[in-house]
Length: 372
Ligand code: IPM
Ligand code: MG
Image 1 (cartoon, rainbow, N blue to C red):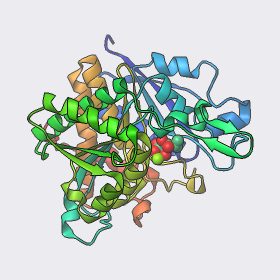
Image 2: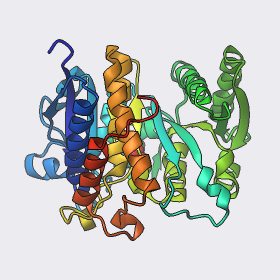
Image 3: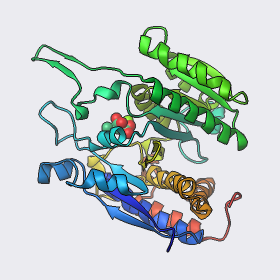
């Protein structure tokens, strides 16, 4: 198997394990359907459970092994009951973003038929946007996991919001290229710079670089929004949004909000891309209250698996990986269309296994994705 690629698999905590297992099954089936080479999954222990058991938040050689793989897949990490002394949760994932320079956090938000529509306006059925969350700096630069906060005894703590030219140029170029790819498939072709440039010098700098990069992409429109107004617009007219590019913390918050618009976090897929590495994870947490109970919606993880296949296709030039990704996306589309995907998260009758089995049978069915 000359093109055999490896995926570092970090199942993590809580439902991270349930949804990772579901994703591996679906990815394997889609690869087979697309006559693509199989992947080798290499499991790496990491997370709060790992920390409680071993005193380390990731296996000793875990970061190196993750870096050596062609892609990293992560379920979910963190348990509220297991914390560091300063009160923060166990987050080796933030170190992986930092170490591998995974600056482009791609968070697609799309409405599916028969999934809950949280807004009464019928146009909410047309929601189809991407929140592009910078994922290595911004306010997360001094996330506790990095030990960069300034702690002044027990009287004051300062966190730093860092914006660098190098990362921001790459981020904005990524945003415009993404808008081009989406435009080719019918999206409006517009990137909105979401910031707080009216108040913070760092955010004015972020916007200045956006304006420097935008002319390289004359076929794509540009727009601006302050983050508070963008929060309003995501409720008022989310169907108008295409690609929204923003700082790390803003993206963390608005991607949950946007996930809520199309059902819930069980639909929130995510790809975190750097120059040489890619990490794929559902944007939801570990939901320990439902772990191991066959209740979690695995679709965010499964759709993240499709994003991973697309990434591997580009990285390795193996077109059949992209076809496998399209099989997964097509199965999710077709399943919602026929109301045969009814996750418990949305009040439906299907647990993790039932949703997974249904996607497997949709992939096995003959109808090919339009683009495959
Ligand atoms: C996310 C999550 C993580 C983050 C947590 C679990 C560290 O909320 O991927 O959005 O804050 O980035
Ligand atoms: Mg989050």
